[in-house]
Image (cartoon, rainbow, N blue to C red):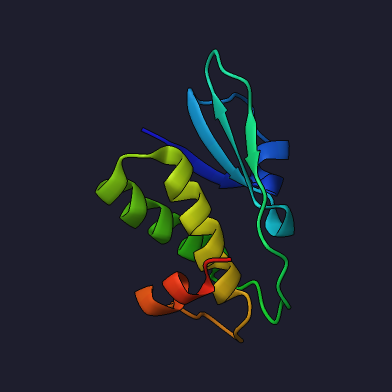
Length: 105
């Protein structure tokens, strides 16, 4: 099981769960696992129009990809791409699977 929080929530935490994913804006996401080194997955820089909904998109895309692949690395990379598509649109925007696949850099 993984817990996903954003950078502000991470800075204000009281403890760290065993498996934690922290989204860190335009720097991507970092995963913390008990007994392992933290790993940061960078993301491709895009023109940001609105960050509204990008955390929700990240989590949905992460869950989608992880359920199919059972590979945490692939799921985080996919989620970063999906969030990158979302931030390029105004308001709450849910990218299609086709948009995410086409945005793979």
